[in-house]
Structures are given as C-alpha cells and as structure tokens.
Length: 534
Image (cartoon, rainbow, N blue to C red; front, side, top):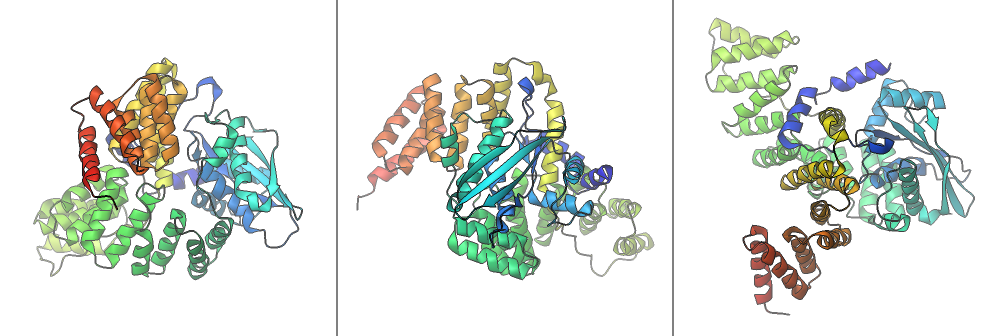
C-alpha cells in the first residue's frame, strides 16, 4: 500500500526532472541540516485533526482547527508540514474515511505511506469553562511516542492555546526558535475565533455552494485572511463562476504563502474568461517563482492564443522537463505546425501517441502523413492540476542529497552557504523561502551579521516589521552594513519617522556611496520631504 501511494505521488505532473530543473534554476527550497541529531528541513510533519473528547455541542469544528492553526505556526520552522490536501489524498488512497478517527496502527500506516518523519496526534476536552489540549509527537524513525504535551485555557483563548502547543512541539524536537515562548505566541497576527470557525466549516463542507456560504462569512469577519480568499476563489473556479473566482484570487497578497496557488487559478480563470493577456501575465509571474511544468505549459497556451512566438519555447521546455506527458508533445506539435515545421511536428505527435491513445493526435498525424492540410489547427491543451506540495517534497529530498557534503563543513562555512541561497531567493522575490535560509544560517552561526541582515530584509518583505527591525539591529551590533541600515530606514518611513530614516540612510551611504538601493531611497525620502504637510 505504501509503495502504491508513493508511486502515485511520483506520477503526478511535478516530476523529479522538473524538480531538478527547479533546483538548478532558482534554488527555492531549504536545505538539510541534521547536526546534533536535530530534525532538518527535509523531515516532514503530519498534523492530524485532534479528537473531540468533549460532550459540549457545536465544538466538532475545533478538531480540524488544530492542524490549520498549528501548520501556520510551524511555517517558520525547518519542518516541512504536509498539507490538508496531502492528508485527505492519503486517507482516500488507503481507504480511510476523511472523518475517521484512525487507530494508532492506521496512523502509522498513513504516516509511512506519506513518508512523514513525525506525526502530531492529540485530543481536546472542554468542561464548560476551560479547553484542555493533549498531544503527542510520534517519531516514525524510532517508532517512539513523545511525552504528553498539555496546554489549557479559556475557550476564547483557543488560538493562543494552539500556538503554545506549537512551541511545545518545536521544543521537544529541539527546534525552538531564539525567541521565548511568550514572544513566540504573540508574534503571529491575531486570528478571530469566529472567523476561524467559519473557515474550518467551509473547508469541511461537502459542496462548493456550502463552502462559499461559510467562507464568505469568514471573509466578512476577517477581510485580510488570504487563505479565505484562496479557498473562495477556488470554490468559484470549480463552479465555473470565473469572474467571481478572479475577484477573490486577485485579493491574495503577493507575499503570502497562498500567492502561488492563487496565481495559478487566477491565470486559469482569466484564461476561461478570454482575458489572455492577463492570463499570460499571471502564469509568467508564477513561472518566475515556481517553474512547475504545468505553469510553463499554461504560459505557452496563453501566449499561443495571443500569437506570441515565445509559445514554442515554453512548450519545448515542458517536453524537455517532462517527456512523459502526451499533452506537452501535442501542444508543441500544434505550435510547430503553426510555424510550418511539419516534420518535427509529426515527431512530437508520434511521441504523444506512444504514450497512449489520443484520437485528436492520431487524426492530426494522419492528415500530416497524407499531405492533407487541416482546415483548422486544434487548440492547445491547458493544464488544470496544481500540485506544489508534492513538487516541494521531492525537491527537498533531492536538494538534501546535493547538500550532503556540507554536513561535515564548519558551521560558519555552512551558514555562509545558506546566506548566499537566501540572498538569491530574495532577488527572485521568494521571501518566505529566503527567510528559512537565513534562519538556518543564524542557527548555524549566530555571529553571522549577513544572516541577520538578510533575515531582516526577508521579514520586511513579509511585512513583519517588528522582528525585521530586531534582526537589523542585531546585524548592526555584529557588523555595520548598508543592507541593515536600509531596512531600518525603510521601516522608519513606514512609521513616518523621516528624521530617523534620513539618519539610517546616511549611515548606509557612508558605508557604500554607490549603493543603488540607498540612492533610490534617498530620492523617495527627498520627494516625501518636499511634499507640503497637511
């Protein structure tokens, strides 16, 4: 059963070849660090819904709320947290009902099938006043159950209870961040409990219409929740209400963890609305951050509909990355025919047919062989599947193997590698992944000023201004740098503190008079100061 599930995962469109291309081209994922027997980024955590041991009515939604909140709290840790979709897919392929309370033996089977290194299981009870959560971490490698973790408090304090529980788990796994528990609990943006309830009920609903009902209530309660925007957009997309899908998906901020998935379905929705230029722009933007083969394919389809000759390059790339998908060969053949490259097109059609029966490809090839010119070329095929999670899992494993040589390297050298990777990711606009690289560098070498400065830049990009300022100051204490001063200057501008911004900018320019970012910021500051005050 485990082998069957793993083969299913490997057969998805995000193939190992696409992962290799991804790693070579953009180095998006964190690397393994397993010194001192600590879990590294390659180790995966599965969080299961907590069992409801309460007799109070109306609390079943809290079961699913635990993996939702806990997963978000682990986002800055080195662990790779498996998604709800991963879990439901594994349940389905193992014949376990989604709402089942699996036995310990079944939990082991599910975790093994998903290649999870750790599983977080737990339960909660409510006595009418306080909610108490109990949890254990299952170490799959050692087949060992951790000591029980317990957190309790008023029901209205559920989010903080769950966040404190996340800290306890990280502490057991020796992954506790530098901040104290109180700081960890308070660092996250607040979540409205009523909005969370509506969101979880929406995620658990059996129909898209019902999902939309609950999710719109969640959006009304918390208009800033990107997860709600994403799920609403996808629900409308599945109902083929593409205009409504575009409305919600376009709201997801570019810096949010949901941005990649939102942009994929935004591009599809715009495609079906006939908004080809917007669709092409969405897929082009996404391809720069996450080069999945289906993204390149869809970029090619949108470009082809616009008559852009660049479409051929996109289709050639998909065939090169994943030659096992007949649609990629078919799309390339259609584009080649549009350019009158009949011989090469026939080769691609034969490649498509070698992978399975395809009447449309067969008719087109027969027409080419007979010398008959088709009255109209068929349309290229769009890809609707999006599987970033499997892609990232495979990429993590491959990148870990590539970084094995650094396992025995001195911590300072290892940290310098992560700093370089983080800087590359920042340049590509992938702040969340860059943050993980810089945090890994700080963990390896706390005295690395560049690691703290890079982390400050990443946190600033993610609009975590308070921690960004803390890291910038930590960097300056170790070694003054233009980067750290510029972070402080930009944060000062956000706080409308022009005097402090100017002072930090002067420090940056003193260290590097030719710094382009400093020059740009100086221009912005001068423009702001020249505006009349109101």
